[in-house]
Amino acid sequence: MSCSSVGRCFRLCAAPAAGEQSGFGALRGLPAAGADMYTILEYRGLRDKATCGYCRGHGGKASHGMWAHSLTVQDYQDLIDRGWRRSGKYVYKPLMSQTCCPQYTIRLSAVNYQPNKSHKKVLKKMQKFLQDGEVSHTTSDGISVEPMDSQADSPISCNVFCKDKSDVPEDELKPLSSEVEETEKQYGEKEMEKDTEETDKESGDPTETATLKTNVHCMPNPGKGADTTRPPCRKAKDIRKERRLQKLLIPKGDETPLTEPPAVSPTASKPKANGTKSVEEFIDVPDSKNLAHRLEVKLVPVSMEDPEFASSFDSSAALYTKYQMSVHKDLPYECGPEEFTRFLCDSPLEPETRPDGVSCGYGSFHQQYWLDGKIIAVGVIDILPYCVSSVYLYYDPDYSFLSLGVYSALREIAFTRELQKSVSDLCYYYMGFYIHNCPKMRYKGQYKPSQLLCPESYFWVPIEKCLPLLESSKYSRFNGNPKEGDKDHLSELNRVRVLHKRTVMPYSVYKKRRKGPSDETVVKQYATLVGQTCAERMLLYRS
Image (cartoon, rainbow, N blue to C red; front, side, top):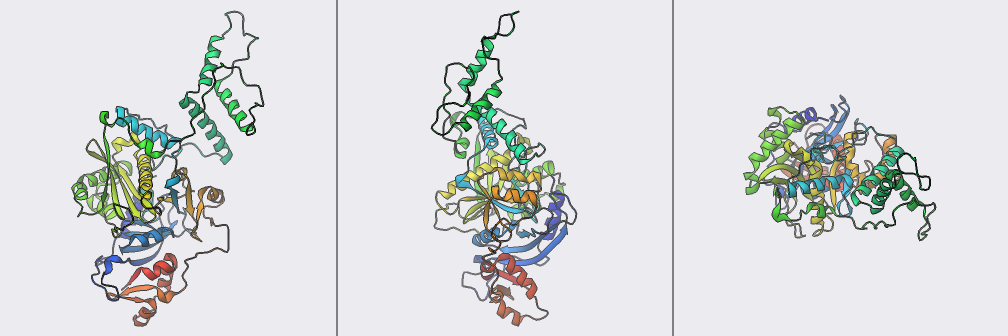
């Protein structure tokens, strides 16, 4: 799922216009703090009939866009919760009812997350590699290398999630099953059987072992045929199925089995531990003094004023070029230092330090993965008041056997959980966009418990309730109450804040001073999309 063409298209449309500048200096009508504490946006309107990077359809993509000269973390948090997403300094919102591949904002409750079997495999694989240097090049982890999304125009951020800086997810956040999709019932049954087999195999069930030994040592004497005094030999797989069925059928507190159990060794099976390892326990590598490899994860703010970011810029940019050319088949001029800077280093977010416990502060960061002193992956993230938002992931293709897309996503989830210990509200991990009619983008639904944003009411709904609706229609309103609409809908256009000729004023004053045709339709469209709260707080630049 290459997004290179989409990325190129987006980068052209998202670039600032000639003569545009991000510095506005001192503005009239604002406190002495100046413009650096305010969001300043230029609304670019609707861009439709664009090529879709997900289904490759021509003219099927549509989204509204804004160029952000500056953006406070709170304003961006509120915009994300209304379906917006940034790619560099370009902020866009898919027109869900018209675009060919609707993109629903998805978030994970990081504090309640427990790794599933596929995620555990990736974590264990990394543990073994660091401890023993063991390398596994198999692709049987049940995970497909898929990026997370880095969006630009339509998707959200090709990040851990396909290339895309503009429209297609791009970093492998998590593997997608390569099997052909079956009906929901068939898929569930198949997965249950697979899970049962793997669990028994990993736990080393003594009952199963004894059964297998019985079958081996009770072979009839040569020439006499089967021993009719003993029960027929049965496959261990069938025994496990029967045992599982019995557990489901036996009423709670009733120890009497419904059917006669198979003849097995008198050795009783040990009960499995009730506790489940957390993602942090898997990440922690024991015996750190005798490791074959050492992995260090550094969080650096996206700023050339930061010495660590500045010193690693060249190696990070070279890694980005290598990744884009190898994984997304970009040409050198499409992924050089300039493009790298515009896409992943230029951020409109204004860094903020608040007295609420987040030691690193809020804003845009690069989470760098250093293996034995060499940078092998970089996860681009935004730390906001209520979440860690994944923007993009790029990595060294030589280390793809470590499933770095999935691994980095799990590390970012663990990082969110760490921040939540200091700031209780910062408890979500935003994975970008979930695109149900794009099979390669469904992997995000495997991170649970997750919620999707209703595109009409902007309420969060558990993904399990959304999936049946998306099976029926690619675009759906998730909120079941038809009377419940946008609580922050535009109610007073005259209170929209406008920046005109370096002066901040309400729209009621601006429209009287403006010369030329009325632009009320455009301003109203902008305010409707961002909501009344943001429209009154942010500054809409009008020339």
